[in-house]
Image (cartoon, rainbow, N blue to C red; front, side, top):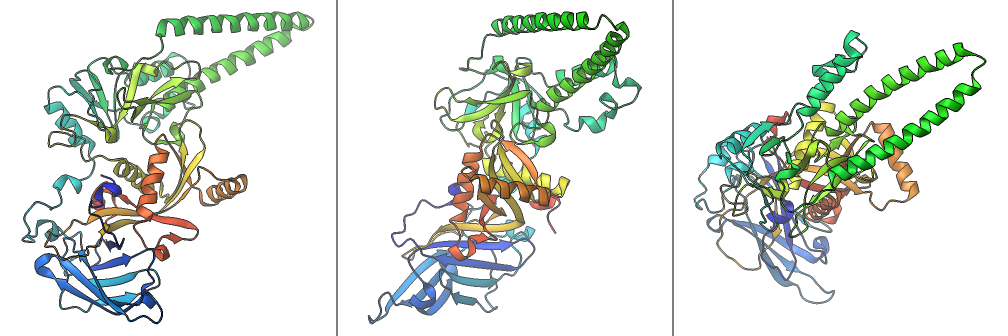
Length: 512
């Protein structure tokens, strides 16, 4: 679920908007009401608020001074109240500022208190927050549910087109902490050279290979055999192998000619040839191990968001799109010479696919996944593991910087929407867990701005991550930025925004 999906479909001709915001463990909630063409500090006098508990509405009234010299007119609007417990006995703090009206309430319990989720608000269950929207994106749970289905076919979330043949076997993606698990593969110990290391590498690389009917699953993606993908044509593997063989043969002839010429020049010293030969063999061995390391690194981790240690110059990622509607589905890795998938595998992102029809139905196991939640999950994991709250998101294909992001509050709760211009009894609206970030769109930066960004990266030891969906992510952040009044929409030269949180943050160590 994205922020745009949380916004109501109602139309408000006066364009007054509202944002409720609170924090975990804090019994305070703030309401921001704003209009792009209204200056409340001078135009809204005699401001009053009234809680209409029976209708789950907050009534806001004032005298409107639109024109100098004209008599003030009475104005009013109504704001839906979220599913929280407001302390009616505590005073309400009300302010009319230059670009918004701010109302602060004291809560009986913080918004994330367990009692709140189980409290009967006497408005039925129609608008209650679904349990899975508050649950973490759990890999173990996905694996168990997928395995219990017997067989699964995957569908495009945008147009419901069937994307794959039936998949019957599901395994967890092998751990990306392979170096920590076997340091001696590429270390300096006795088994770092020769056949042992190469066999271990080959065995580990094979664990990333999917045969037909097999599906590897990680936190953000599934990996299937290219043969199970419907409607997508890859380059002919035999022709590519012939092309590679010819290319390799030509290089061998060139090297042979160079070596022969070089040896003729060194006939006056055979000792010199022996030294050079030994150096070449050492370089070839080191290059072989380095290439295997680089190749394996490129296949490790999740392709949804690749971190620097698992980025390889020898591997490129190409997008996979729906054959019917052309919407993005995922990506596949290939080498620099051709477009054939390495290990015959393709990666599909959970936020773009469904496990059943109808899309988003009760049997759709990936219905709770969204681009925002998946990105937020990876961002929070990085902050927890690397203690880095600053990130530069780069394009996976071009390596160019696209977004500058600073995590400032992982414990926000928000609700957004249009104010109402008439009294209508409605259920209490949901308030959702969010993470609050500062961001800047770097996609069209100048050279001087890029230099400043590089300086910021070096100064603050910023983490680089690489993604394909940078444009869609930037659009979500821009939408979240518009949910705040102008005076609250930026800080220290960066725009402020919200992203839908992946879970109750206690599970990630951010609860306190």
